[in-house]
Image 1 (cartoon, one colour):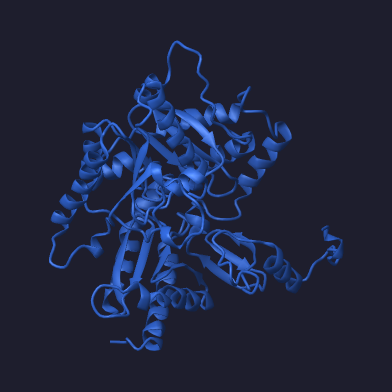
Image 2 (cartoon, one colour):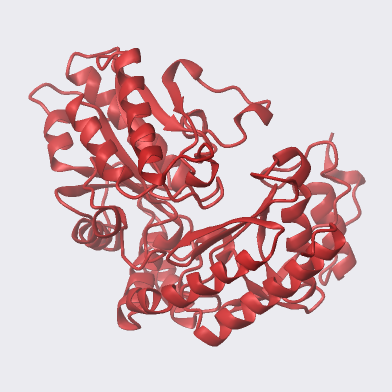
Length: 464
């Protein structure tokens, strides 16, 4: 059936028409399928700096930083100029048979930023395809090594690695709520690594011992000959900004090395300044993984782009004398316009010392976050760099998800009414503002959250 029955689109649609078309025709990511055509969503009209304006003219702080990605802020004329210039110079060239100047320069830049011997860059369309590439590279590697059974990926509960088939397969977030198929034969999940949810009376150090042992026992039970990789976000961001206990990453890397298991560090969120470094793996967590996946802040969200960065050690094992294609790739791999946007983004971040700025304001940002421990309704406050999460505790004891799932939505709605967007996740609200945020803007942001916590506490009958 054609769309001829639909009313023609006018040259200047009204705000009401835009909302109607968005509601009726635009199926958004992670939509609730029983109500998606009934929900009146926001339409964002423009952005500037850390702010966005909706179709009704309301200004709001972009608390989530888009989707963890708007590092340099909205509305950068330099970015628009660089993108337009590259479009006019060369909008596209097939990555299957040609290279381009922006891609070559950007690949070299990422090799410089990455730790250790991670010197080979495979460009993708975003974070999901970067993770897919890392997992397919592991499959390719072990097939080349004559180890066709060494394919299982160990991941973690509450991890999120993407929405393509392989990346969704290794995602542990809300796994039981989906109706999508996943390749369960290729993945094994470790228990929650959130120190807040450790058993009562257990020290953080003992909890870390337990979590590291979870990995080693899983490898031994599955058989090292069957386990190909361990994939880990340095911080489980979409799972609720979960910061594993100190020393966890270094010790799990040692376990992987011991059992010949690749370590894939998924830095799609933590890369490009979110923790004050180009990549967090080595300077923050003291690890040099076998592969790093990245996207999001690579272009500050101005255009889609991702990358899988692979170590020389792995590349040497993937190559050989016989002719074997690494038949992985995308029409828009190393897209020259996206690569040009990434290069301009990096130039701006270097010139304005945005990484240094993040390291400077982080202590204040985290101090303001943790000041909310005075609210009885708050169960946990956690974060690192310019990442934060507020987890509600409406019920007695540790947070009960069934009883507390309204907390995040309530907090987000009140904050939005007062000029701040958050990202509600069941009984949590998370935020990751643009990295250019100033201390006065941090105060404004957390003042709004504080007022919202007071209101939510009253509404839910827990005002202390």
